Length: 371
Image 1: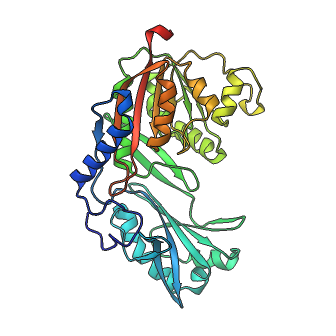
Image 2: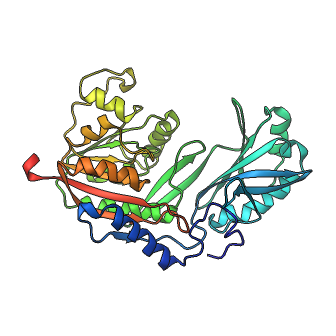
């Protein structure tokens, strides 16, 4: 990827390395971090070299009536003004200058704007405009006049105005199947579509031969992994704390005609308490969570990893599928999980080229001595 912002923008920190050098850098780092686990080789899954991000966020810099996209600079307290960003997918990349020019000419849309968030799919693009001022009917009227091919949302404190929808329709192709999703603004979605498809395919391939009954998924989001994996299990119980994500997951299951999933709006800690009969939750709505025969647990936690209670809880499953966005907390959690389980597969997914970030996938199986 060639980018005029390399060396100025703080987003891409490995800009001096070509892609093969980045790959070596990341694999060497992971070998050092996980050397004590006896991992010598990782499965590696590459990204596109450019136009790979379907989510992107930018600050807005004002200079009189002129505005620019901006990112935090490579050096502390610096700012980089961005004319274009080749890591964004083609739809966002093409829209960015057009949207900026349109907003710049409209005082109502421009005034007090401090950020823009983009979300794209194969066919649609959504932009969220973030404001310090409270939005009103004048802003809505100005936004409704936009002739660009984009779904616009305005956000200010306690106010959200959707002009022409608050989600994009997406599909993922993996292992010969196509899965459909509505990706909602405000609900987490994987930022690298191509790598996301590879993660799903990797999980499906690696657990296909295992003995399977029911699946428990923690941190299910909008059903990104839940829906493809449901075909391999008799029943699935998927949990997520976000109400927006749970509602989206239910919609996405219906879109794909999947009927063997129950979604519960519980945190990982709350579900642990519920299954341990420590506490009952009205949000389960009469769901019989004790009727499952769980053979697998899928966890995709935030950067903080697993809390102590959840870490002990997942040890009770014969098979653990752990998707991690933070190698440090993954290493901490694996130190405990390998006391009862062995690592069967370990993969690295390059979600974020030109950065030090690494997405990992680990599949663990309970050791025979702990059955």
